[in-house]
Amino acid sequence: MHAIKEQFDVVILGAGAAGLMCAITAAKRDRSVLVLEKSNKAGKKILMSGGGRCNFTNLYVEAEHFLSNNPHFCKSALKAYTPEDFISMVEAHGIEYEEKKHHQLFCINSSKDILQMLLTQCSDLGVELRTSVEIQKVLKQAQNSSEQRFELLLDERDQKNISCASLVIATGALSIPTLGGSGYGYELAKELELPLITRQASLVPFMFSDEIKDLCEQLSGLSTPVTISSNNKTFEESMLFTHRGLSGPAVLQISNYWRPGDVIKVDLLPNMNAQEVFIEEKGKQSRLTLKKYLNTFLPKALVLQLESLWWPSHKDHALCEISNSELKAIGANLNQWSLKPSSTEGYRTAEVTLGGVDTDALDSKTMEAKEHPGLFFIGEVVDVTGHLGGYNFQWAWASGYSAGLFA
Image (cartoon, rainbow, N blue to C red; front, top):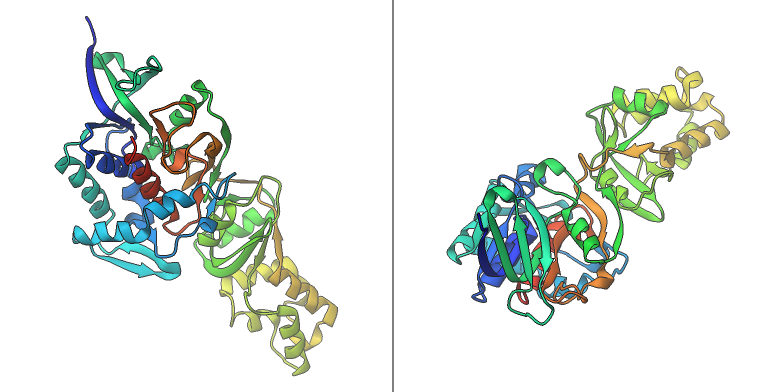
């Protein structure tokens, strides 16, 4: 049996945030667009994001909110498609949203609103979307053919081959594979000899194998505001203890900068110099125990664990009975708790993948591969990773839009 051959102007691999935005943008230029998704449903990562309410962008998006081997690469796309542009789309579709701390924007109702908005536009513009599609191979056609540059060989069951002038890789990355992400984009980049930046799980919780693991288990579910630092980067946010280790916004943020073997420093009393405060309180002849005193500032369960860790021999002593040197040592621990994670939880729970297709191989204005006309890489598969807080979605919208203008 001969395979049926279909032709499109643009084929997009991946029906996530970047892929759907690219499809909408290209279709508005009257391009025939086909979106192929390996999962059984479009936009799974959109649906689970923001606790089901989709932190779809941030009011303040700058290049400094992103990590890349080339920190300037993202600027062009982010300028071409701004948070205000996406907010206008959201408002035009009557989706209610709210601003939360750190200028993050969330749907008031559900992430489904954002996905439905994208799918409705795709449908209205004639974009064809197919799910549960496996691609066997991508073939490059003769270089002198600008009309149909690529041919996709699909799963044998489909008995279909698809050719296109522009091929857009929006396959996501290795993070949370259950939501449809994969390493396919990297494999394709390798086949076509595009350079890759080393990948690792990021925006991801830490795990421990020493005595800290037991402490975290005891405190599982407890959250407290902290300042957390690693490799000269600092974030002030809440930290969550889990049965495996540490999570919460502060930990996810610093995981972008942490590397295996590195130490993280946690300040449990942000904006307070514990050493000075302890000595001052001691000068008042305070009869309070350290535990009683710290219960004012920290969760009681946490203070109890820290007491066992740092001052077990003084648990019944009043502040005024503890030497200055010991109080300073305890204060230093509270402000500079030095922890060495054994690892992260990995791609299973990572929100993003750090690294990816080297931006040196791509045009920053169009997302097109410099050595492969008609081939575009967008979204998470590219070596551009945002901080927590809507930045990765904004990169998806912006890179998808930029490619859609030229694909």
